[in-house]
Amino acid sequence: MVQVLWVSAPFLLHLRSGYIGNPAQSLTPPTNVSRNKHVYNISALIHTQNCRRKLYSVYLEGFLLCKVRYKDLHLWNEQIYRVFGNRLPKFPPKYYLAMTKAMTNERRLQLEQYLQQIVSDPVVTSSEIFMEYFKKLQMDTFNMPTVQLILRIYMPDGAAVELDVQTSDSAERVLEAALFKLGVSRELGEYFSLFITHKEAKGPFTVLSLVVKRIAGFELPFLTIWNLEDDQFQIEVRKWYMNPSNDAMLMGSTEAIDLLYLQAVQEFQMEWTRPTKDQQQKLQHCLKQQNKLKFLELMKTVEYYGYLHITSCTSDYPECDSEVTIWVGNNEMSCHFYSPGGHAENLRLSIKDLICWNVTLLPKKQEVMSPNHQHLELKFDYQQGSSLKCITIHTEQAFLLSSCLKKMLSERPVHRCKEELEIQVDKATCKSNIRPEQNGVHAKKQALLKDKREYCVVDNISDLDL
Image 1 (cartoon, rainbow, N blue to C red):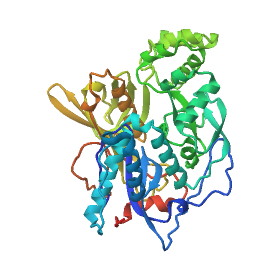
Image 2 (image 1 turned 180 degrees about the horizontal axis):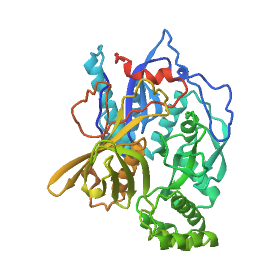
Image 3 (image 1 turned 45 degrees about the vertical axis):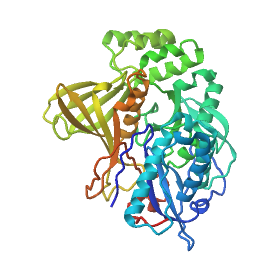
Image 4 (image 1 turned 90 degrees about the horizontal axis):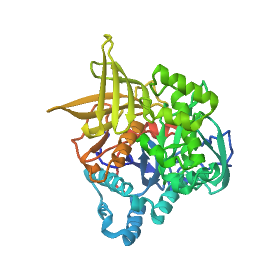
């Protein structure tokens, strides 16, 4: 039975336990680090040896982050406790006798909650002891040597910069290198981030794709992109804020304006915004004149500029199988519903009206076994007058949507305590067995590795004693 954990954190982590070989030998080591365009692939092979060890697979927003033993986490907790003391959450206790299945499940849930709270603290996640440990975990999990390589980082228009980096460089380090090469000052780095994006057949890059996510600062971008099978997935630098008024903070940098302009042009050409006919004519004129500042100034007046745009969604509101288009940004979420009967309805919700939301990883159909295809839904409760209502959205971008909602919370004034909104993420089982609600979120998603056997059957692995 698949168990559910509810945790509140800016990153969605899920632990899954199973018997596997030594962490350093769990994956077939690459014979060399070859480069195919910008994407790196690895074939995973799980060795079942006589000397087996229990590992927990840690998933970050649906992507396999690393595998780790309880013993190793326990030792690391003792080390980091010397630095941060009571700032850290309580670590699951160690048992000296054999554990029952219930105790094993409880430990796994406690480890999930522990890691969720750890990554929620920016002081801890930015520390050297945290960054170095999770770097080692990721490198050991995929048995990846530290070597020099050229990594391509793309911009919204499809142009790329090539960076001399190492396989062990974190996303924070890669982002700094990319912005430096683009001429953007280090002080403006907080307004940008790295994303996994997808190149569609018609050419432009878009975040409207499957398994797209923001790369966390402590992740290793090389390993993240290497484990994706589809060579259309790439790493892209994009602005990372949901309030369009933050554009003003970047207007003093010509290079930052260039990045804003490229992303704004993408939003306009991909029809993610909704300009009036007059605005569209003026924007087209600015494009021909290549007047970047004027174009950005006009885009600020366009509806849904700077929003995340999500299409190809279905909903149970106002009736089952209704199509819905979503825009999220500027402290609101706007949903346009189109029911099978022809009824259309628009719903605009302020972020403060959302009571809670949860992302659910649904069981796959037997015929759909590709690790690049997940069945996700996002449910949210909102206040309408004195009543509480719930809507379910089926979208493959549920994780990205959840991240953007969380980002909007973090951008609100400090006195509006962001903890007032509980973010919940759970996973459904094939039998629809759901554990009673607890605080927080749960996220689990298959690792995107070529060997499907390991991750397609992980739900069937029994929980055994460490």
